Length: 404
Image (cartoon, one colour):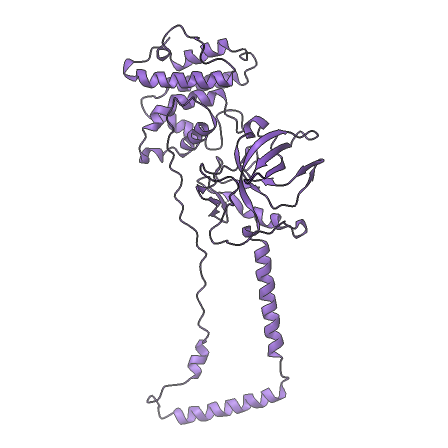
């Protein structure tokens, strides 16, 4: 068994205690039970993990055990002589939310690696942090979803600083065309000898044009203007129908989730959207999340879709999720900590009252969702404008993903 140096004894003790607490909770062991013969800080990560598995009744069916042990070995050897291993981890997490499984639920490997990296990452300066954006995003996700018994201090992750978006005002166009200015002729005092001839030619031209105008049919200018205004009004109404402002997007908390009784790909959730209002929503998340993962999770959902049945189960909302390009990873959007349950998500420059209920016949959602996506910093946006709450923007662990 490799021994941990006394200089790092305090760090090793906190790390090991956190691993024991989180793993015992995951594997249904009693963390208060004396299961180690020596002081806990004397164990390296690999030995600690192996001893806990030996005491767990779930050791035999543990999935991906070989892959898990590779990550345990990574944690055991961290940190190395330089930041090479952290760079490799950052690349590995570029298209993943968690280390193993391809979904959202952290594995025991995530628990062990997080605890091993915690002390090192906590001491990175702002410049160094920018070199490992995927690692920092993953650390923030794990510390908010896993329980380490308060043994590891929370790492403050600086969220992207976003300037409020302001719709540009179109400047008024000068209504005086250049031809009109030219037709005004030279100012007084600038007359030349040829002005008399020019005036005479101009008068003749006007007289000729007047004759032609008398012969031409008179157009109904008022009717033309009315048609133009009607077209502009219709265009503005169509734009309003396709604007994100018609959606009532709110922060919700999933109180309960379970499998759909007659559809393997669907889950049913009871979501609290404030003021005692619980909505039942059916989501196609069964392949990506378990009911346990979704319970007590904050989400962002559209609450003014028309209620209807999905495979005989009533649904009155739409949980917005981000997905990568091949849709192998799908996860609900994550509201920031501090966002109020039930508050409406806003979009700078797109103010307006949402419709009471969306009209499915107008296919409004189909026109809006192509403009919903996460940017390269994993911020949820509509046409590049962030999903904003009172506590900041809504996020995802998936950068450059689509949102539906």
